[in-house]
Length: 138
Image 1 (cartoon, rainbow, N blue to C red):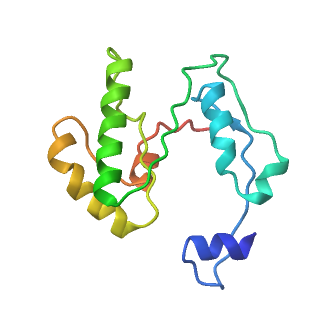
Image 2 (tube, rainbow, N blue to C red; image 1 turned 90 degrees about the horizontal axis):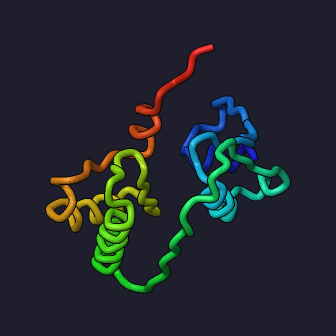
């Protein structure tokens, strides 16, 4: 597991890595937690993930399509517009994540979406988004 984490994060082999198992999700509905289970690393499959939230939540809307980056950009734009209409009075700020395979893909997707979404949304990395979450000391 340590070797896998080091390779995923591009860490030198001499860097110490601690592995933690997270078992509770605080701000997600039961459906989101269940959907996220499909993306668990193999080592985490033996551990159940739970949520404090008792809400089942809206159905997850998986979209599968084939195509190039322009197609991906169109599908992302369509999905965001659909979610925005469904959640009419709720801000999507800090509620949407777009997962990309690598940084080159991110750059091209931003370029495709910039003019279409930049007035309403700001693109940030997962690292930046995580740093903005409120922290509870103690």
